[in-house]
Image 1: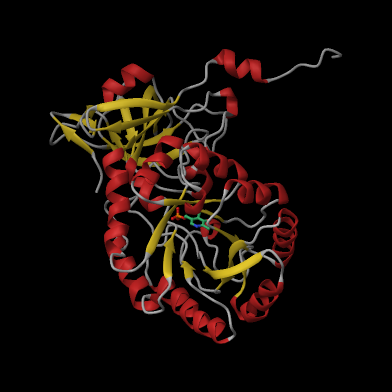
Image 2: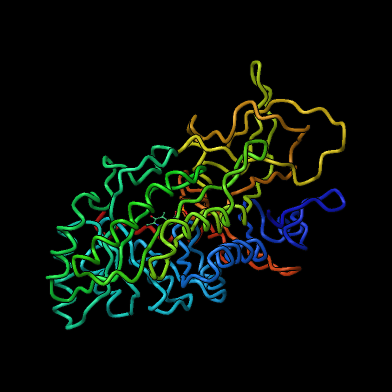
Amino acid sequence: MDHFLYRDGVLFAEDVPVPEIAAAVGTPFYVYSVATLTRHVRLFDEGLAGLPHLICYSMKANSNQAVVKLMGDLGAGVDVVSGGEYARAKAAGIPGERIVFSGVGKTREEMRMALEGGVRQINLESEPEMRALSEVAAAMGVTVPVAVRVNPDVDARTHEKIATGKSENKFGIPISRASEVYAEVAAMPGLEVVGIDVHIGSQLTDLQPYRDAYSLVASLTKQLRAEGHAITRLDLGGGLGIPYERSNAAPPLPTEYCDVVRETVGDLGCEIEIEPGRLIAGNAGLLVARVIYVKEGEGRRFLILDSAMNDLVRPSMYGAYHDIVPVAEPAAGVDYAPYDVVGPVCESGDTFAKGRMLPPLSEDDLVAFRSAGAYGAVMASEYNTRPLVPEVLVGGDQFDVIRARPSFDEIVRRDKVPAWL
Ligand SMILES: *Cc1c(COP(=O)(O)O)cnc(C)c1O
């Protein structure tokens, strides 16, 4: 469910007509809904009610500080995967004790930054990384709570580029080696084992891989405890999928996911950490674009938009599907026809959809890509020197720009031409 609905023939973001934002901000732009973001956090909170838990929003899905601050206000923490995300989380007011640091290649500098600013837990992904963190922590005279990311070798049944829990993926240590690795970590100065971490992939539409992975984590918890480790937290990662294509079968609901958590690891007396990203932010955002031209090609009709692959890369990167809807509600009974929906970037890959059935559209019409709140703006670039797409936040009848579109002047000034050239 989201808060982007037609009212009186026009698409609204909560109580604001989308054309009003377009007039104020220009196109293209992202718009996010406070009500939808809030609802998604609450669904997980309610699903895990009764279990000690912390939602650590995976901020790589959407790292705008306004969104991150909202997460903090709702009581959530964050999962960060870089020093940059850590800095943003702190700037957005997330206290160190609610920041989990994940990622396959944390540098010593990033480790130092987290230890200085405060961190709830660092998730370790390899033995060289463990040794590095131990050295950094010991040199600073501190002890850092850690979990080891185990790779359970389960098939997440998702797109290969976002599957992370198979043995051929670069993430974590093989679960079969966990016992040995935990013994090593426990012996290293500066590190305190507090839990186990697992994250098997993104856009999962089936609960079985979770059931398999979390059952393995439950057995591992018992085994590691028997070996003398104090396992008090389980970080179960994120990855729950969202319905990009409305006509398709709906993926599991957060409550159903939380039931799997309860059934598999709920009786271990551990604090549960979950790291949803896409499910919280995905359907809370639209990318709004304007039609530049409708071009009649040979046997096909191109809808050329002012948004492009640099603004929303998921279709060209993953072949991802996004619902595209006109901002003016189509009249009942109007004829739909196939369009190839493209951007102006000089790449054939700059195609959002081929043969997409849409109502009649013409120059200057507004369209919206649904489910664009996660892995949208964060993956945007300035390819073709197209200014980074701005972001807008709506709450009720209010809206504000939460990241402005840079001017051509700002872009041009960023390059430095050496005096000797
Ligand atoms: C990307 C990521 C997540 C979030 O995944 P979603 O599919 O957006 O829920 C959570 N944890 C880790 C470690 C990640 O890398």
